[in-house]
Length: 196
View (cartoon, rainbow, N blue to C red):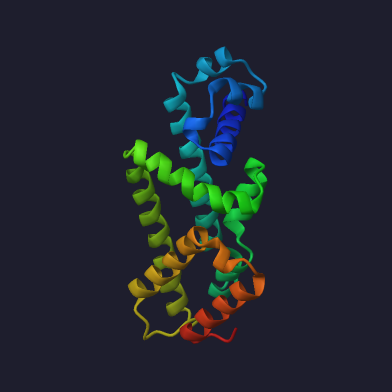
């Protein structure tokens, strides 16, 4: 449990203030352990960053995949992901960060991480591919079940939905109010041939 506590405390601080502005002493204080206690689990600050980023990616990807794989309609899935912002809500609850803070700071954090640690691009790319494959499979099932129009290109739809999900995190201020997000889902559903 302590390793997990340290990882979550580090992630919270990295998201709030940025990797280079957080010391291991501060992480220890946040997690309720000494700096030496951190070294029991992590070789150095970069090792802790790696664990924190992997933890964040694990939570984001698992939440998206869980929603996509549930026996819900495409409209219910899109509503959960876009209108209800299920991924962001999960991250906020799990890591104790305010939603607005997460929406703004996680982009800065990811830019900082990928700038200094390009190996994280492979993880990001892998998670993106996994998410796109899951979206594509769910859309194929929706076509087969007659839930959405059969004349639509699944690859194009997958790209549109994935881009929308990513854009929601990048330009969160444009999606600030729920009614805007509801209109987005309603319009996508109309394009898919569904009644919103």
